[in-house]
Image (cartoon, rainbow, N blue to C red):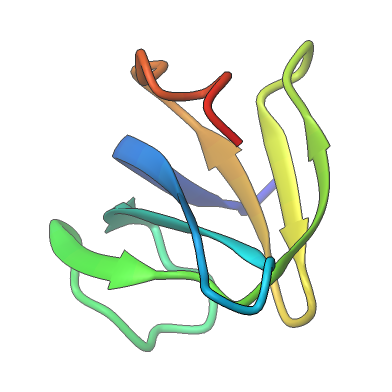
Length: 73
C-alpha cells in the first residue's frame, strides 16, 4: 500500500485554533515533494496515534519517529 510518511514531525496550533503538522516527507504518493523535503500539512481532521495515521483534507500520512510534542495539541 502506498502512503505518505512524515518523519521528525511535530504539531503546530495556528492562531485560528486549527492544528497542522510540520515534518519531513518521504514517499509522497502525489509526487509533489522530493524525499526529505520539509513540509506542513493542511488542517488535521483526524489523528490515530495507536496506528500512527493522520488525515488532512487532502492526504493521509503515516507518522514515523514519534515526536516528544505529540501530546502538545
